[in-house]
Image 1 (cartoon, rainbow, N blue to C red):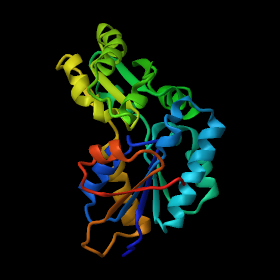
Image 2 (image 1 turned 90 degrees about the vertical axis):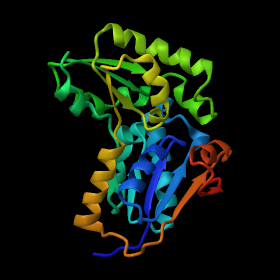
Image 3 (image 1 turned 90 degrees about the horizontal axis):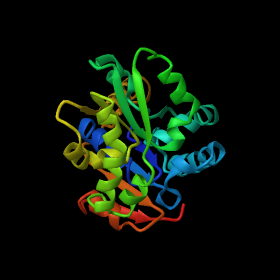
Amino acid sequence: MNNNQPIGIFDSGIGGTSIWAAIHQLLPYEKTIYLADSKNAPYGQKSKSEIIELSKKNTDFLLKMNCKLVVVACNTATTNAIQELREKYKVPFIGIEPAIKPAATNSKTQTIGILATKGTLNSELFHKTTEKFQDTKIIEQVGHGLVQLIENGNINSPEMTQLLQSYLNPMIEANIDYLVLGCSHYPYLIPQIKKILPENIHIIDSGEAVAKQIQKVLKEKVGFTSSKKRESIFYTNSDPKVLSEILGNKYQIIQNDF
């Protein structure tokens, strides 16, 4: 089954490019359109109704681009809005949730940490997920300020190091052996995080799992591209400088006040 329409991806900013990278690696010939709603980042501090409206706006933009599938590459948008998106639109949606299951299942200390936004940790979907793992102690930490620093290009700043230490040290003291990154921005902090965590603590993000789920949906419902031409287009409603640096200045970036 062939379908040469693009895969649409949106996030509250540049963080979802970590998800895009996993998709691009597994499905290199699929055309992708990425939407960075950096003007409204971070979503994690907004109300549920605001997150739903922004997610609908982003979806409308991608569907105008004739996308065959929409990836909600934002934990906060997934946990707060994906049900409403699936009810409103006919296109398939793939969401991203904190990878609690593999962490809780494999933890030897029965203690795991999750670093996420306030919007994700307070969502009903997140609470439903954590209730399934009553035997595991889950230490939740809101990553106040992390998304803003990433969006401003301050990944390796002293302020970032200080924030990460304040968030991660209590988890280390609590004897976690898995750290779940519950925001698509946070994989860009893995080099920083590894400098703080002991080597025995595993870091988990959701990129590879999301890419595999997309591959499954394309195979079963939507169809793969028959083209061998690689094409990825990025849209942002903010300064494209940081997005360009993250992508290594390799791709077309269009500034658009969508």
